[in-house]
Length: 151
Image (cartoon, rainbow, N blue to C red; front, top):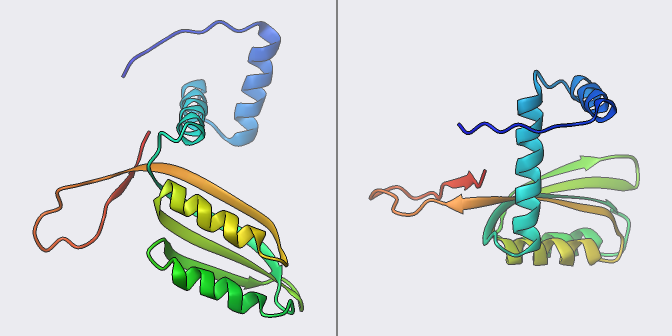
């Protein structure tokens, strides 16, 4: 583990410590590590330096919208190689929340998320991408892929 020191003015340090307490961090080091990971991963995603990812896509839609549920299901079936799982929640008599868990090439995952979010009647589409490394060289008979977070 490498150590480094930073200097903060007193008011910023106090605000930072208050934020850490509010979020439940045990110490500054854990909080700074999380912030750095988030920034590094954001940079990778923005610069297309993350070829593979895992992701969750959540969206709300009105299930009375003409053929919308059918269209959404069709999109998922056409991307069966990306969709790992889905969860469907009834919010009220009209609206549903759906969350898809995705894994694959970042460009393909983003394209699917954009296509679903752009469907007429879909609201509040939000994707959370996590860059991963795909482990190669699985032993014989080992049929699943290991996706390890980058940082």
